[in-house]
Image 1 (cartoon, helix red, strand yellow):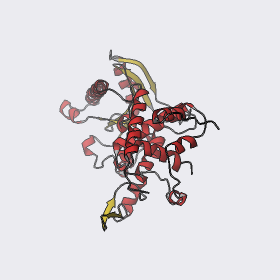
Image 2 (cartoon, helix red, strand yellow; image 1 turned 30 degrees about the vertical axis):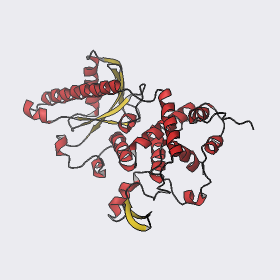
Image 3 (tube, rainbow, N blue to C red; image 1 turned 45 degrees about the horizontal axis):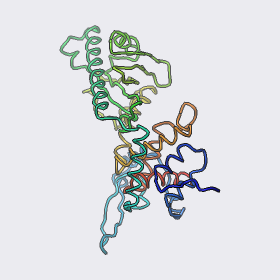
Image 4 (cartoon, helix red, strand yellow; image 1 turned 180 degrees about the vertical axis):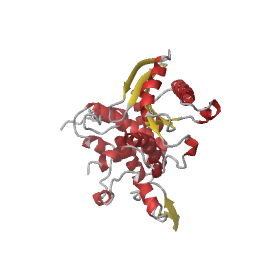
Length: 341
């Protein structure tokens, strides 16, 4: 077979696997992946990072494991705090790996996968304006329901982000997934009727679309040229301050319907992933590449039966846990190696 890689540049080889339909074996060989003992991988179940919280609740002694690290002839005990299985290796990247990592970053930049600082600030401003809009809406509805103005000002909702924006892998063309947590007096019916009408009256809102009957009810719109996907989760409390549970506590699901649980899971999963990866920056850059690869191959769509964004994020997070000190180029190689076994 004719050699595909005629250059030593990782950018060219990475571009190849993004545009071709051939196997990734050539790419793995090119990056000099050594034949690791396959039993090392078989012994590690690729489990969801969320299982860590389940293990913590079972026993305080199960959430951390002791790993012996050899340092200048002396063994010392270190506790590894990420994931449900121990890492395969703690090795660090070589100078050659660091060079390849820089090539990957340049490749990602060439595909315009990084948002500019100016655009990020604009997104933050838009989120602040939407949050203010909802805050005013909650007060108006509360007063209309017979609550006095002072009490109404205490009954407010909070805006949270999730998805690619929360994970830190937002691109210039990405929308922002966000969700309003509201007290019990703001029902889903009020949200899709009254708040929808309030959005209609805002001159900054364009392409407004309400989808209350979908699997996860959502309002989609563009606010000041920023795409927004907005959900609602109503908690059974008079004010959010009355809720005794944090979002990562499973008891927050108590007495909630399935729709609310699905909405809340978006925030919880994103936060858990970020808390369970050893190096957030390497995770983000690796995820950017994997998502780009999946989209170029036509494999990125949970609607069509493939994996969606959060699924690719979980798979990438697991690789980061198994190789906590690797850089982006090494993690990409291990991603294809581990999941091809």
